[in-house]
Structure formats: C-alpha cells, structure tokens
Amino acid sequence: MDQLNELIASGRLTELLLPWAVKLGLAALIFVVGRWIAKMAANGIDKIMKKAGIDATLTRFLHNVVYSALLIAVIIAAVDQLGIKTTPFLAILGAAGLAVGLALQSSLSNFSSGVMLILFHPFKVGDFVEAGGTTGTVELINVFNTVMKTGDNREIIVPNAQIFGGTITNFSARATRRIDLVIGISYDDNIAKAKQIIENILSADERILKEPAPVILVLELGASSVDLAVRPWVRKENYSATRSDLLENIKTSLEDGGCSLPYPQQDVHLYKAGE
Image (cartoon, rainbow, N blue to C red; front, side, top):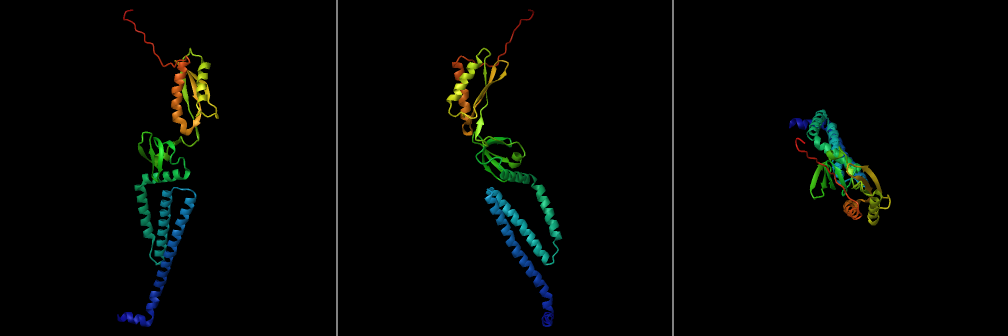
C-alpha cells in the first residue's frame, strides 16, 4: 500500500497506466466501430440480395456468415491493439476451420450446390422436373436440399449436390411441349387414309396448337407394321391429358376407318421326329 501511495505521489503510476489506458481505449474504439461496420456491410448485402430476388434462406445465411467473419476480424484487430499476440489464435482458428470443413465436406458440397441452384434458377418452385434421379414437382428449394412431390403424392428430399452435379430436365421451362406418338398400321392399310384420319382427330382437338403445325409422317417400316410419327404441339399444362386422349381416339378412329393396329407376331412350326 505504501508503494502504491509512493507511485501515486511521484506521478509514476500515471506514466505506467496511461499507455495501457490509451491501448484499451483504442481497442474499444476499434471494436465498437468495427462491429458497426460489420453490421452495415451485412445489412448492405441483405438489401442487394433482396433486390436481386435471392432466396430468403440464402440471404439470411450469407448475412450471418459475413457478419460473423467481419466480427472475428474486428475482435482480432482489437486484441492485437492491446499488444497480445494473435498469431496463435489465428493458427488455432485455421486448424479448427480445416477440421470443420473436412467433417462437413458433404454438407458444404450440398450448400454450394444449393447456392448455385438459387442463383442460376435452372428451375423454380412449381416446376415439373427430372433431377437427382427423381421426377416430380418442386415444392421447396432449401440451401442444402430440394423437396419434390411425385405424381403419387410422395415427398422426396434430394440433396442439392446430386441435383446440380447431374442432368436437369425441366419439363415446365417452356410454354409449349411436343407430343411424340408412334402409331403402327398394317402393311395392307392405306397410308394416306390413315394419315387423314389422324389429321382429322388433331384438327378437331382444340388443345392442339396451330403453330407450330402438327406433323404426321412415315417414321419407319417396321418388322410387322408401318410406323407413323404423330407430333402435335400443346401447352405444357395440357400435355398429359391430351396425349392420353389422342392415343385412345386414334386407336378407335383407325379401327372404325378400316385400318388395323398390328402387334408383333411369331410363327412357330412343329415337326415330328423322323419326318
């Protein structure tokens, strides 16, 4: 106590504490200003991504990542101002980041794929797609996975890495789709008559688009039939119902018109032994 009083009386205590007080004040100032800058930067990224129409989940995630990274940098700068060596902390932080990255390799792959899906929009919610080995309607696009609903009302959750790393077929991307049918008639049937019957069916269906015009042509001379290619265009929402109706109407109308729909046949000849 006597030594403390002596330091106070001599003014040396002020000399000893003043540098530390200055360092502490500068560190506090760096932390306060740095945290404010980190918040401003994260909020600025929020505004930019919202204007760009980026998914809200991805926006919140990037906001937290940016803010946390900047805040860590600010804390390190403030600690360094106090004269504390930060190199060991940086080494530990780097090693921890590497360990976490290796442990979460598959999750990070799904995350990066989810970011690419959200940014480039190969499909959107409500589209009917074939992706990641699954065919269905997209219900939700998350950062790590995509939720799809199949035609029989099953919910399938597909990791984003499987989707972005493979082929994506989006059946809903275009306003129109072409129906491709192959209709086989007998070699004895009149091709021109069969084509006219099919053309009448297409003309009578209001769902068939006039442009592009439907195409009916001889596709192949098969082993047991003459195969006709029937290629009308419809709006994407009418595809399944129109295709089913055309198959039924074409079969019925061809049969009523005297044409036959052959099927593969095989002749078997039996011989008795010794003959």
